[in-house]
Image 1 (tube, rainbow, N blue to C red):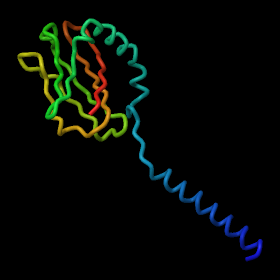
Image 2 (image 1 turned 120 degrees about the horizontal axis):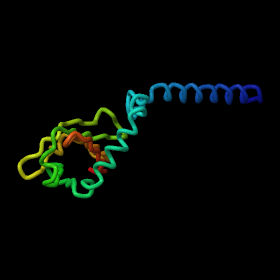
Image 3 (image 1 turned 180 degrees about the horizontal axis):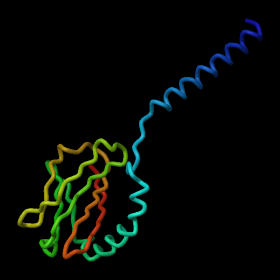
Image 4 (image 1 turned 180 degrees about the vertical axis):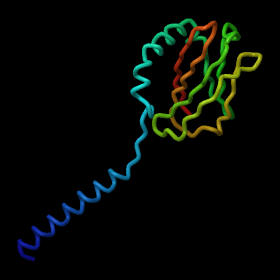
Length: 143
């Protein structure tokens, strides 16, 4: 084999490698943290205020991962909760996020079936209103 063919072979191989990398990069999916991130950024001060409101409750809210369920234990002081939402955010796959209204039972526990979740890390983002104030707490869950 002469030098001309070797140089041509290296050049064709390099071009093929670049084309494969371009094809893979265009077919690679990506998930944004939020579809409407600009509007969320404008409301971020509200989130800071809600987090400060929830400081007395943050340590008393407990998340327990069992074999069959994920249990959120709320303190008795949150029985007067007017409305709320539990948002299980999975950073690696937006299709596996789960939103649910907070509906605790008489003993202050809300259960979620573990079969609704896949293995991985979730960030539980809870927002609720009580006595016309908004509260926000985040917990990290590893399944």
